[in-house]
Length: 174
Image (cartoon, rainbow, N blue to C red; front, side, top):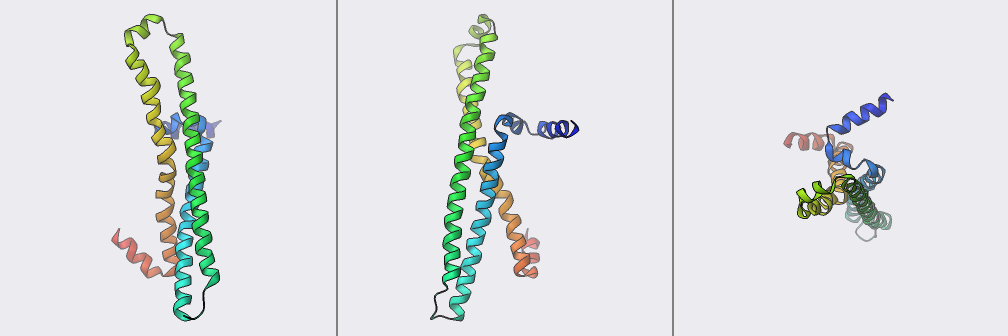
C-alpha cells in the first residue's frame, strides 16, 4: 500500500502523467521502444566507425560484418522507432476515447441548466479541443522524451568506453 501511495504522490507533482494513468503501460512501452531505437542508432554509428577503420586498414577488403551491422542497426532503429510511435499513438487515441467517455458521463449527470449556462462552445472545447491537445503529449512527446534522456547518457557511456579523456573533455564543454 505504501508503494502505491508513494507512486501516487510522485505522480501528483506531474499532472499530465496523472492524466495518462489509464494508458501508462502503453506509454512506458512506447518510451522503452524509443530508448532501444536510440541505442540501436548509436550502434549503427559504432558499426560505421568499425567499418571505416577496417577499410582504412585493408582498402582492398570489404568489411562485411561491420557493414552488415550498420544495415542491421539502421533497420532495427527504424522498426523500433516506428513501433514506439505506433504504440504511443494507439495509447493517445485510447486515452482520448476514455476521457471523452468520462466527460460525457459527467455531463449527463449535470442539471440541464448548467450545460445551457456553459454554452455549447465551451462544452465542445473541453470535449474536443482540450482532450485533443493531450494527443501531442501522449503520442508525440513521450517517445521523444525517452530518446532525449537515453541518447546523451548512452553517448557519454560510449565515449568513456572509447577514450575517457574524450568523455571528460565532452563533459567539460557542457
